[in-house]
Length: 159
Image (cartoon, rainbow, N blue to C red; front, side, top):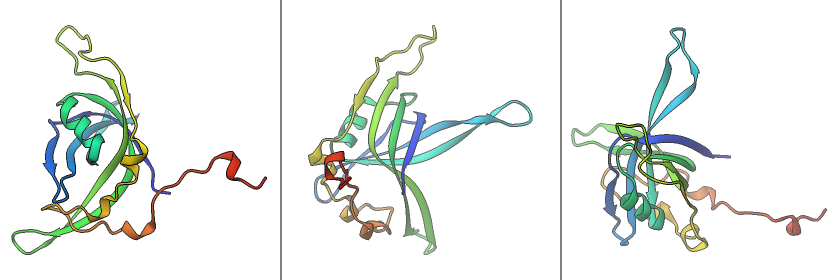
């Protein structure tokens, strides 16, 4: 199972793009703190590259800015591309398919600037095949042939 859940703040404003098939794309990075402290009592921070597609990307591009705190769920995607110098570069991104606004950026007085709002993709969003989207910096999704995620209800089970 390839499932990731992150809680973090945007390190910069999201980068908005349109695919050749006219689908909106959002690229962004989240700063996520570790639950564990090192020997000095400091928590390490990971900066994780993320991408979202379709209506979720539109929501992110419209409402998220540097410092916005979100919870994001998705999957890990490894890709590669050929750099301008001819070398092969490898990337790891989280393909975000659901998110929740946890609060806004903090003001100088410590108050949050936004309320909590949840977003989950509709069925029409989940039926979009993101493996055929072409961008300028990544190659095809190496996991595109593994199939789509599906949901079983208790009525579908034989016991």
